[in-house]
Amino acid sequence: MINQSYYPGMIDSSIEFFFDGTNTLFLTNGCISPISQIPEKIKKIIISEIRKDSKVEHILHNWFPYNQIKQIEEFVKCRFGGLDFQADITESGRLQKGEYWDCPLRGKCSGEGKVCQHIRYNNQIINSTEITLIKLLITDLTNNEISSTMNIPLGTIHLMKKNLYEKLEITTKQELALIAVEKNIAQPITL
Image 1 (cartoon, one colour):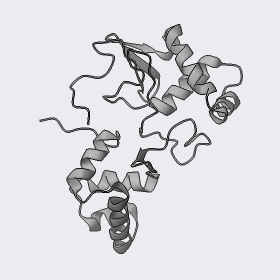
Image 2: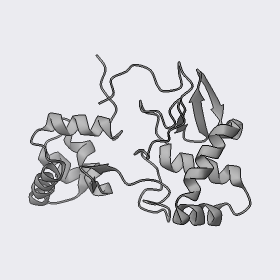
Image 3: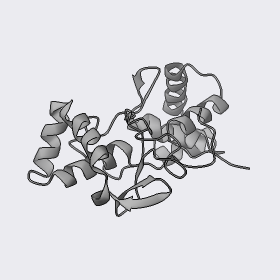
């Protein structure tokens, strides 16, 4: 797990993309800038990544047929929209695979799992119901309260929890919390 107190791009030339609820921005060399000001070198890295996957390229072209900067913006928003502690593009130019963030279109988007990446752990996809369950399990809510919140019978919650722990190969709530932070499902608690 990454243990640092600054975001990538705050003190180096790595790139951290994030969506602030209105705009897609990037952080590098201590400066936050709009995606329209992305350096040409970084733009080429992103375009190259888009072209590696014909499905992604097709979806982005359908969404923004004549606007490459909008295609780039949507790609980085979908793929890297969360502000986290892992550089989206390292100083050496290596692009990470993608990250989870709470996109409001999750479950309703034609690009889901293609433009954005499914969250994976132990090489298995964690689906949106499991993500919701993780978020609730790492709180101080009881299983009854989780059942009520998710509007799912208590017995089903117990079964879902058991299956989730098996899938993640864990046995404790603490392990689940560490995975949630690692995968950007929850933010780390600082004391």
